[in-house]
Length: 254
Ligand SMILES: Nc1ncnc2c1ncn2[C@@H]1O[C@H](COP(=O)(O)OP(=O)(O)OP(=O)(O)O)[C@@H](O)[C@H]1O
Ligand SMILES: [Mg+2]
Image 1 (cartoon, rainbow, N blue to C red):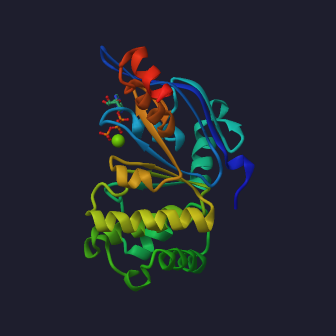
Image 2 (image 1 turned 30 degrees about the horizontal axis):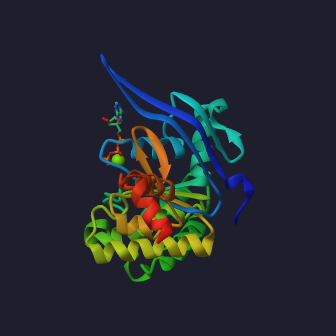
């Protein structure tokens, strides 16, 4: 269900890492508003800060400065326990390398997040089966991850992310380990979840074909975010040939 509280907002976010004498300024004044139900891609060079941004949005890491408003709350004011409760209730994660537990079946992997919500065993099983059905994995519920293909593992991981019915799904290169056809299937599935369940989705990707399928496309560059339609306009401007006034006079007078 969409709710205006599901909008998220980052205001002038900075993130600096310090390791010994080395200081890395990764995010340098990020401003971003994402409406409930949006589908957003984030591209950028390796090391540009995509995962750092995702960890901030997913409440896994604190920004060095700036305000992050999530579920109507300024997250800087929340304690770690409150942040992890918010995260557990509202955020689902999907990763390039799936992060499924190898000794658990698909069903058990998907049911796992519900353990922390204190649901009964039968209720957990029912919910996990429902989610596995939505990702067309009903015929593999008792398979372990090593008995599944890459695309199937990612389907299970998506079902696990959605089993708690989060308002926000964060996917860090969800198609990075998949061949192009399987990657496309995964994106089609994420788009379906976005359209049918209204879950807000942010996808980090290196693949322009994936980014193009999103409603909104962002690029991270030099620690700042830029919308792709803005970037295209800047690129166009910088490509205006320096032909001088004579050329424009000719063009305008025919
Ligand atoms: N925990 C950390 N401690 C110190 N530096 C870090 C830490 N995490 C990331 N960095 C640095 O921050 C920068 C951005 O890293 P990040 O993982 O966000 O990049 P990315 O855009 O996700 O790259 P990739 O496309 O390769 O996944 C890198 O220079 C990295 O070395
Ligand atoms: Mg990364």
